[in-house]
Length: 344
Length: 269
Ligand code: HEM
Figure 1 (cartoon, chains in turn brown, cyan):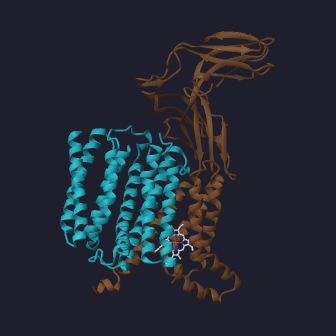
Figure 2 (figure 1 turned 180 degrees about the horizontal axis):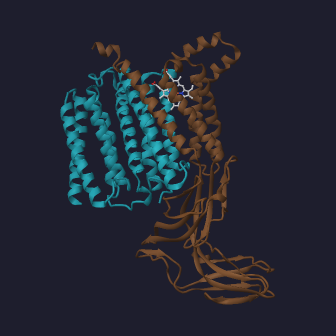
Figure 3 (figure 1 turned 60 degrees about the vertical axis):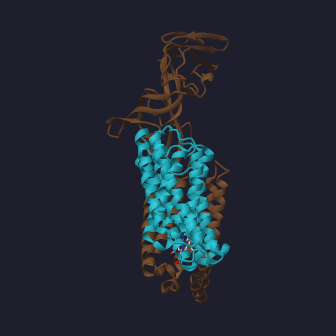
């Protein structure tokens, strides 16, 4: 039926109209859906950078749908069907917008420190309106419970959020309980570890600066608890390694992630090697003084931003309701039993 | 636990009984539909009890291990098929084709480990129940469509006298596609609930995990089947094969992919 009507409309129309009729053909829909299916099959073997593959078939589908909505008389006669397909179109558009404005990133914040708006790594759509510098929170402390194995279970991270007016409040977040601020969502992750805190004074005239050095994740890289970094005013990087004997996470019983009770650092600067415990200090370079203040932890956060989701949900709900309405209207009019069966 | 297992066994025996009576009736051209329904309802009641006892014992619903996923889906498929046959009496003989699908799942379930699993922390949400609930209605609707498509196909294969008391192929195809449309609604809702859940739990609503890709493929194929029938008006057997295709994709999504990746959602734990 649809094709007969389309041909009738098509034969009377202007060239633009005829183009629309061609673009909006239902046969085209089959091709577009097949194309989309093929591309999704491709997704099974391609993990990253896949997003752009779906763009062409979705574009074709959107074009087909738009043209059909404009020219296919079936849509004019059946409001619920029109609404359903319009919401599908809205869905495609929203998914596209989402890819333009989204952000996915990773941040690391030491215990007691404030998030400084910096991401360790990220990917973002070209239209992302950067507002991370207005997200203010402090990672106050966290507890991570481990089941025997050791297998990580719950993470409870206490964070203090600061609003524009200068007020603050505390919230406990976790792997699946995000901190949400300015549309950004922060989730704790398995990526966390230790961070020695140092105070550095390059010379007697300068005032000291305090900072922490984040070691590789623990226990993920338990055997590589070392890193190097540059101190202002020193020509060579400083290398540091954390050493301790105790097993933090047990195999046979439940345990909790925490700093070791006793530990020391090995520090190397050029040819010189030091062992440091909290409170120790060493002279580096001409007149620099580096003191070790103690061990903290750091947490790696997943950061996500995409405001399209509530609109996507609205579009889906509209789609579902209009489809139900369409079914109700269509099926109430006619029994599923064919006339032959009805006679029988 | 033993009591729970025993009740489950009796439920399965009742299901098998229902299926066997339905198949036997087809071969012998009898009308045992009431006994089939009675056995199905008995199986369902016992199965519900077994699931409830397990839920009570473990403190979480049947959606963590493969054993639990199979058991709860056998339950929901049997339930939806039973409700559909109570509502539309003409489809009752199709039990002879629907029940063997459940037999397959029962056999598989018996080969899996009935022990409990650890409930991932992300499962602590109402979206889990919404997602799973919609999914069960979706798959149940497609199962009913599959039964009707199966009747069309067996008539094509074994002669048009098969299932002689059921309506003609035109009617069966129409009804099968009405159930597919119902399936489309609930599949869409299931995807939406899953996406909301994923966004709450991980910050993003879609990530092209294998299970997500498979469920999208099922959805697209469902749309394709509905459109193909409307646009090209294929023969009944082709329409019926499309229904089988939708069911097969749904089956792989529900049970194949979790089976391969060992967890219902890869990357979840
Ligand atoms: C990808 C997503 C799509 C889905 C899920 C979808 C789904 C549906 C559904 C459920 C129906 C109702 C069938 C019935 O009443 O039995 C339908 C009908 C229809 N669709 Fe789509 N559709 C999609 C894409 C499209 C596109 C891209 C077009 C553009 C041409 C289109 C055009 C139509 C038309 C014209 C009808 C009415 C056919 C008739 O009643 O004879 N659809 N679609």
